[in-house]
Length: 353
Picture 1 (cartoon, rainbow, N blue to C red):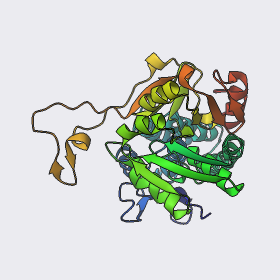
Picture 2 (picture 1 turned 180 degrees about the horizontal axis):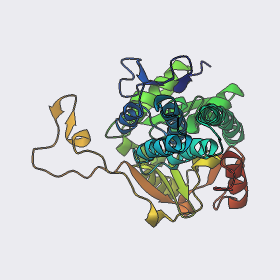
Picture 3 (picture 1 turned 45 degrees about the horizontal axis):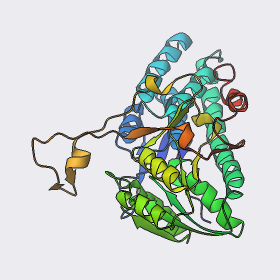
């Protein structure tokens, strides 16, 4: 299968290169972020999205700040970089990996004794986090592939593939690994309103890898479960607290329907996406602009003056899940929090381990 590198660091130019996911599937376009402000814009516009990819964006964003801030005084330099990191953390509030990625690099430069050393440590920390994401997705895929029957149809929601990570993916990483192991897997991709990440991104990825994929309206999923045409559901996650999974809005609906019809429902996410320190009620769920629902392709789809509620995520309680598929194993709910925190401690020692 041809790997897609969603986000990368160009050390020659000191820039972040990412795939503009707002243009797919019609146009494959690379964006170069030369400033933190441009990266923040890319995150808010969903040019880059998906929890693991946002973690890498957070790390690379702080690295970018160390290259763009020309300050010789070490203490002032660190303070200015921290301010840029705050901009990055605030770009999207629900996904936990964005802050984690920024924190990894901030912690690394905090141990430096000079500006030049801080820049070196920022590069090493950001690269290590990106490399770790690639490894964790492959490990997650390996664990999850064992759960899939030799022939099956998997329903997924939004995009939890290579485009949501550095490469390979979480939910789609499980599917890719299963296919590589010789299993016959077909995918039902929910279109994922209002921005169609399933129709535009998941279908594009799977078609590229020659994995059979069919796009369905979100509202059709329950009917197909009722008809026995869905063997299991696999979704990703943007944050997992001890009482809920935060993922693209619509996930909760699919989980309720799967539970009613006895269809296994799996959440695929690396250990970095788990947040043991907060309850669901403490998490801010991002609300996005009215125009995403009220307009499409330049055509008005909601009458002017009519209100729109546009939450980007919803929360699914653990009791609706069959299991968590992670890079350190498969856990029926509740997950093994001690193992999760030990894995997190390797990413950010002393912070979450």
